[in-house]
Amino acid sequence: MQRTFITYCILFFIPVALGYLTVEYFTRQIPSSFQINKERLEKDSDQIETLILGSSQLMSGINAEWLFSPTLNLASGNQHHDTDFKLLMGLLPKLPSLKTIVLEVSYSHFELPHNGADFWKNSVYLDYYDINCFERFTYFKDRLIFLSNPSFFAEQLQEFYLDQTMQPKLNLFAFNYADSYGQFNALNYNKEAIDQKDSFKINLIENPALYHTNAALFKELIDTLQNRQLQVIVASPPMYPTYLKKRVPSILKRRNQVLQEIVAQYENVEVLFEEENTSDYELKDFWNQSHLSPSGAKKFTQSLNTLLNSR
Image (tube, rainbow, N blue to C red):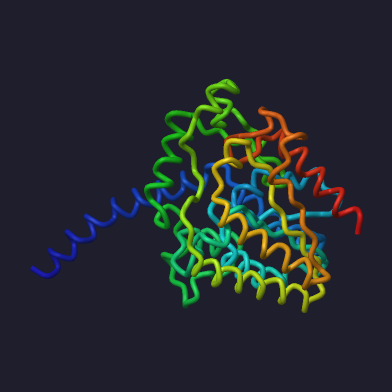
């Protein structure tokens, strides 16, 4: 009886396991900046002089191919300063030529929750970069990509394989040249329609308590970099005018206060503040209200290149 039960269990779980492995395989076949960055770390880690950290604004806003300094861009969607800090500490021993760190401080960075130890991308960082951001001992399942966020990756599988609406074109520096699925592009860059669109992602909720916690960790991060004699560029990429108008003044004021404090306190810090630059960036330079298109990224990357070359 027991042997029969075990046999039935095996017969049940083998197809389930095979089905999951198939899904995991096809998930990993979707073009990924993480895979490209992994390959660069394996081949060029001793040459990297500049490391970019931050969220999707810097991921889509900087093409390392156009930078004079050999650069690795590890920014990714919803990546906050606590994750940046953990990635940095895991990478420092692997990057002997590192000179400069680019960090992002967006309008509401200090009043958004940190990622924490349960951030789903921790599995991605562990599997691709071999960096443990879980703050605990890891297990085999922690390296399973699809399992880390099934709903997100199920949507990606559908968009890439079935609908073919998401077809990223990544260069050797993990920059996505494809702009065909940009939100402004979908509106045919109709300025009137874009300017009338009132609903887009922006934080309008003040959180002064969280601000103090996040600002303290950010200054601890800057302290660590200064103690290791690394230069820091704090970047704030351009935002579309309708985004700028919706910012909460008190949130903005507190963010700007942190920028002023770190510039005054730390000799190794410079600020690349393009957030309010509405004269050099055109409508087609934006992917949506808070992200640059490839043409906008070219301009912002040139600004970063100028700053790097001025050192």
